Length: 116
Length: 115
Image (cartoon, rainbow over all chains, first blue to last red; front, side):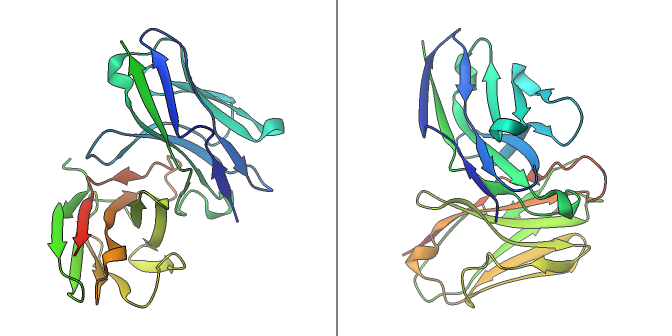
């Protein structure tokens, strides 16, 4: 069974500082990898995904993530935090054998706090 | 496009009552997923359908939970009888399987409170 670990349930950064949210997966075969963002009282929105090809992927709102197979990681970064980035961030995986049609396994989430 | 539509947005009910949550996926999508979000357990996959057929219901907590997808544009998640521990936010998501895009689009969720 797959599992996803997000290190740090809460991360606080200053506005303009680097954002780094960590995600590690446990799977014998590298899965499809996703980062979703959830704003209060809303559903989840896809930030970015890795399925194949280039291991550094860029997403919306200036976020990017790098797939590192040797480290089984898919950390999310943003060079300069904005107040509007304050939200809950979820790392998720999907089994490749399902061709992308399977359900997602989510990490516990990281609450990103932006200090003015 | 209206996105994934869920109803009701909020539901408050008493223990023992039947609860039905509804979902309308994005038109043209052929995969539909039900997730539950709680503080203790986070986001969990309950069940998913491909082309209206249930594929994996191993996440359904117990027999009190049932889900149906009678056609491509509608799905229900029913809890009977409901219990306080069922209180959670229930999300429906849809995707176009085999499109190569892999993205699931989430609805706004139904916040269920069982008293």
